[in-house]
Length: 209
Length: 200
Image 1 (cartoon, one colour):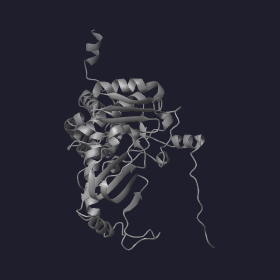
Image 2: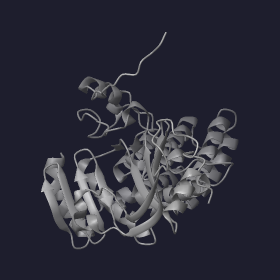
Image 3: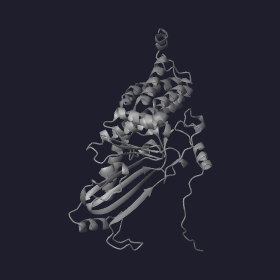
Image 4: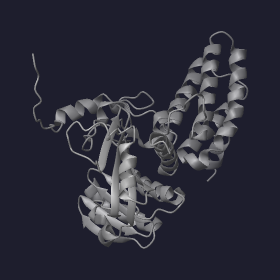
């Protein structure tokens, strides 16, 4: 169905997004770049990515609403196996030593006293995952000093290398659903702001800010 | 006795396994896949994406998806609070209908008043939501004072439970819910609409 409908999907996206440009058009992987963001449609998943989201998440959510409404109706999708929402949060420090000290004293990671695999100190990155039969989250804290190293998908093109110079700790939160989600339950413009607020609140409590 | 850890690979689910998982799925209205009138219902195998076991379980609860309600706090989606209240009213009306039609009818009148409040959320929730709320109100108006039977109240209750669990449902899926209500003898089209359509 995806093979049959890709043209129709892109046509409908062009009606609601600005300056749409097809970056990749293979039967099982279509990527369109627009002023609103990069939209990728694959056989197994679809993604919406923005490098510089606006300060309000409202318009980002609205663009996602439009994109997924088109996908759901054209591909007749009723059930989603997984929804993922990945965000990175930065806590700036003046020196690397301060960053190391901050991570080592985080109770949730406990790297100062706990090194079961004898990785050695100082620990520069630590990841922890919580997962139930409904939701999951991958929490990662990483010390960065210089270019933020991130493995961005090819859809970003030239923007893959345009990353900010940072010093401090990056918290990478990959929040996802484990139980399937009925399409009638999910609207990105509602879910994204609510989830962002929830993650921020929970993370601040976790790292004791 | 000691156990050992051995490297292992995760097998891709077989087609028959995927099918059996799919068959075990029921939607929020309690219908099995084969009972759902959608293109999704029978022939299309469903696959999870890497790292998930999503199809082994029922859909997530709307309360979990949007943040669980803690200590009686309001739900982040305001409409879900109001929907929970009217579902509570319908449950009271259902229980009351067994002993007193008058009592049940009084509760249903309270429910009818609450529908006006619910209708205002349609802008955020969509046409499918608006259709169910509007058709329910029309059905109650069309009763012209005749109290709903227990089975009719139950059909409205089922529709609103499904609506709370999938508030962003599409227009087509909302029509399915409305048809279920109509199947209990409730008339969801405004009186006179047939004459207007027939006059063309």
